[in-house]
Amino acid sequence: MRIAVVGSGYVGLVAGACFADLGHDVILVDNDQQKLAALKSGDVPIHERFLPELLERHRGLRLTFSDNLQQAVRDSAAIFVAVGTPPTGHGEADLSYVESVAREISGAVNDYKVVVEKSTVPVYTSEWVRKIILRNGAEPDSFDVASNPEFLREGTAVTDFLYPDRIVVGVDSPRSEAVLCDIYRPLTDGSYYQERDAIPQPDRARIPAPIIVTSTKSAELIKHASNAFLAMKISFINAVASICESVGANVQQVCQGIGTDSRIGPRFLNPGIGYGGSCFPKDLMAFRAVARECGYDFRLLDEVIRINEEQRQRFLRKVRSALWTLRGKRLGVLGLAFKGGTDDIRESPAILLIESLIEEGCQVVAYDPAAVDRSREVLDPSVKFAANPYETAAGADALLILTEWEEFASLDLDRLHREMKYPIVIDGRNLYRPDVMAEHGFTYYSVGRIPVIPEGLPAGAVDIPRNHKKS
Ligand code: UGA
Image 1 (cartoon, helix red, strand yellow):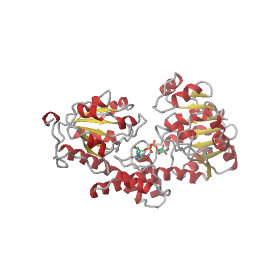
Image 2: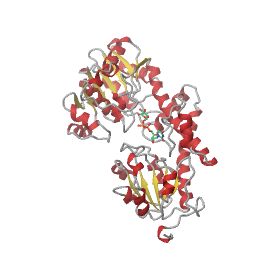
Image 3: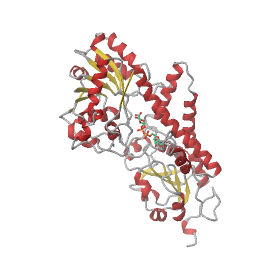
Image 4: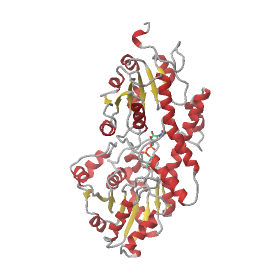
């Protein structure tokens, strides 16, 4: 099938490359000339596993790039709209990009088209898109509007797309349902997975992919409700972690105990420094705004957001309790991205924490396997960047772990200990076992677990500099 994907951001680029891998002819449309030129010349603008391979495989063949939206619409049977929906000052999603794309599509509808919302949008958006296309002259039966929300996560975007837990297709006509079912058939009949060069199957993949057909409004709500539920799960376990800290319990054991109940499940129960990224914070605000507009006061979401913000403050209190005063302290920071596996720093709790620490007068040396370039653009110029975790730790008063990169979970602890001025690790992602850190002589704070304080030191006291310790 010939498909146009409008917007070459995270979702648009991954969806376009994956549709091409399913055998479709894809035109990726963007009005950013610089971005288009970079994509055409072989650049991969985001750090995402398997994306370079897919772009390399299909670029110029089944995947082309264009700034001509109307031509792309004329040439395609389905148009996926994946433009940005940033938050307004009041937390609602700004739909002006969606509206202007709808307006342009209208003038190019030459035969039956399905216009598909792929961006995360509030309920009723499909109705508005339909109105705008009609208002600008398209015939009522020459197109349908559908909603096909995307559930991919950054860092595993390609495998999430090709091995989805479910495909949600929100349609209001059998005709548009048939088009969308055709597009996803290689995943739903399993034929894609038989191909020799299919992207390898991740753990826990459901094959063939299940498809759920709903109304457009239900599909729009499914997207917001899914993200809100996942964020709620994270805030819930972060709240439980705080109670664990007060009573001396271990949140990891609690997670195991509740996560083995199949009704709850173990995933998205990792406590930490709160969720970040370009989706959860924005989507929760937008969902709250949608609910308010529909006359429902969704206070549960307020609390999810409040706990998330509080989680960062709790972490800062841990840093203070480990170091007493902060001015002039040298802190090594492992992790800048909002999560492991990506170079994205949008709403990254790590960046927000570094900003607070700088305000309190700390000197920060940071390292991230992928997000240094982006961080350099936004962080205070006093922040220094190291080439690896050991250089980050060198001479540090304490080491902070802020992103759950796999690389940070397998450090040579003896070497780390030797590098640091004081062997204090404050782990916002629970990457280490407290007993292992104790064995290696660290003072170790984590989330929802009893801190490790070497014998003779009261909790919250300043550690003894290595040079002054008796050997
Ligand atoms: C999220 C959803 O997981 C995707 O299903 C959705 O498609 C996407 O938003 C979107 O709407 O576009 P993403 O933001 O890429 O995906 O990342 P997640 O893996 O969900 O992580 C979000 C944040 O929660 C990160 O800061 C992460 O560190 C944090 N997190 C996640 C936790 O603190 N604990 C957990 O157990 C899981």
